[in-house]
Every structure is written in C-alpha cells, then in structure tokens.
Image (tube, rainbow, N blue to C red):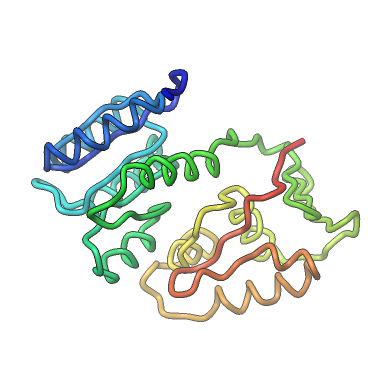
Length: 238
C-alpha cells in the first residue's frame, strides 16, 4: 500500500540509471518526495537547492566521489545535518568504515533488496526526525536531563558534576542521539583538535563520563571501530 505523501525529500545519487529508477520508484511508492542526481557535482547542487532530509549516496560517481560529496555535505552549514545512506560494494569494509567515519548514518551493500532499502531509510529518518532544540530547552534522554541554559546535567534528579569538556561531549552525543559520532569528529568538535590526531583522549573522557552518569552511562554505546552513539530510545525535549 502506498503511503500518504510526506514532507520528507530524499535525494538519490547514482550514475547507474537502473539503480536510480529502482530506488526512486520504491521510495516514491512509500510517499517520499524523490529527486535524483547522476554525478557528484550534480548531487551537491541538488542538495543545496532542495535541502533533502536524506541522501541515498553511491560512492562511485563521476566528477566527484561519494566520499567527497559526503565531506562537502558535512562541511556546509546548510547540509551539515542531512542524513546519508551510503551504497557500497559488497565486502568492501574499508569503504564502509571510511564512510561512517566521515559522518554517514548507515550503509547498504549492492546488490540490495528494495524493501530493506526502504526500511533503512525509514529507520534513519525516525532517528533524525526530532527538530533541533533551542539552547533554552532541556534535553531528556532516559534518566539523563541536560539543561542547556544552566549548563547542568542531572540523572534521575541527581546533579552530576561534569567538567566543561564532559558536558560538551554529552551534549553533542545527546543532540545527535542515535547517530554514530566518529572519534575524529568528536576531537574536532569538542576539543577543537585536528581530526587526524591519534589519541585516546575521547575514550578516556567517555569512560569518565559513563562513570559519573552511573547506570545511565550505559546509554552511551561504543560502536567498535568507529566511535560512540547515544541511544535514541526514550529521548524527548521539554
């Protein structure tokens, strides 16, 4: 059954017309507004003009690789938070790792099931559906409450004494809950460090943060080989 059309726009980027047609057909059948691009430069132009909610992005593209497109999407303020589902070659683990490290939300290996593709798109969009909160909002993730205005964190009503770095780290994970944050991205954002620095600083701070949060620290999940993610379940704003 076709869904009622939604406001969510999906940009499909692939230079193989058969794949573009397949993906676009199944997404449109589910009610998404679909646009397409066949090259890297065309994808960036479409993303900036149309502001899609999600991009289905192939890695092998003419003019600009999918990796380059992903980096540019994350570098542009207008497209920084767009969700990205990568299409990768089966068995090419290095590409998947690099894509997730650069900020992709998920990946799908070719050849893929159209039904699985639709389900992955829906799952990603559910994770990023919550609108950005204003600085005065209280962000609630399970037992954790983050008061942005007061720079204060409580767990089940108990005040947690965090350092400024620990607070920034938790806030970033909370605002992008459900999405994997690469260690390099965390270093660059929280510590203002170059992303190529090799350090266990992130791991040590995450460990300390988990300890201070107590049982709620289990909300911070380690994604082996990539970084960290704060579980999206039971998250809401006040």
